Length: 202
Image (tube, rainbow, N blue to C red; front, side, top):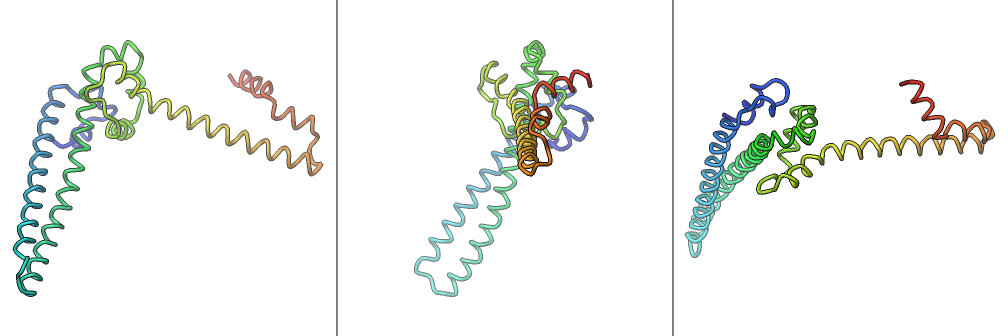
């Protein structure tokens, strides 16, 4: 079963419904596939080297024939490499997902399970493809799993900082143009005012 069908079959968050057994089966299938494709790429490279050696000392016609055959082998190798890269990303995702499932109890105790369950499937998949949890202790796994949430907070802070800076520049411009009173500008930009507005809206 491919990674796509594993995820397509599950509506909502995959970590809630996937069973460790089927993840292990998928891991074995993907590992076997990666090993087979890697061997095919190695065989392909050996064949190219052989053809190159065959061309040494050959006439021009023979060299042109061999060059075409080598280019064809090269294209095959590139397609196989793309196939290998895709399968390898899928394998990393499945391995990481299996590690997450194995630490489910501890992650629930730390409140991380709830956070992971709140992530959209696509975002969780992308994150687990990009990270590596293999061979890490629980604390290290927890730190890695915290990263997407820390990044989200950092992104929000950057956005807010950008908006605040824009408001400041706008206020200065208005004060300098004489269209806004300096004291009024200070009132608009004050933290106290923002806190009061938030309290009123809450």
